[in-house]
Length: 183
Image 1: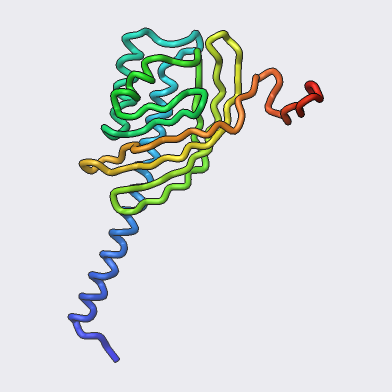
Image 2: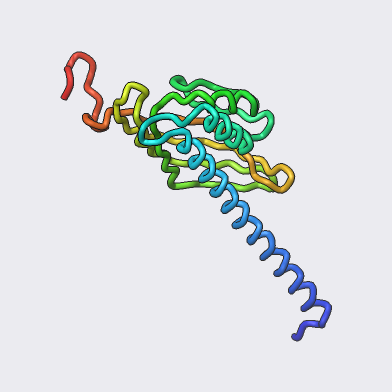
């Protein structure tokens, strides 16, 4: 049985609509990956190998970081870094570096898009240097929520969970058991 011209047209319209949805989903995931890459780039731009950049540069970078978040976003760095609510609080937080160097690697993204909202999980590895000069390894995960505002993806919530923060010299081997010393 052959299809009428109208049936072929309807089938083609359904197919094009489905392809447009799939393309939009791929483009959304790529836009969120670029957003996360830009965040990492800016956070790390606060440092050179010699320490934090100038206050003027920190202010400019902190404002750029803030533009990656919604007006009412939440940035949760956990117990060691605290929680900031609202874009301006996030900007203030990033004006005050807690390290003297960092380089963030966000890997293994798992991003789910649902219309103008999305969530993502990222593993993070960050070689960094404390303010007192100690080289460290930090590894963890970030749980993110995103919102599309005016056609642009932004962070609505970011939550860091540190798996370990270990001195470079000692590595991240098993932590000593209570009462058993180091080793």
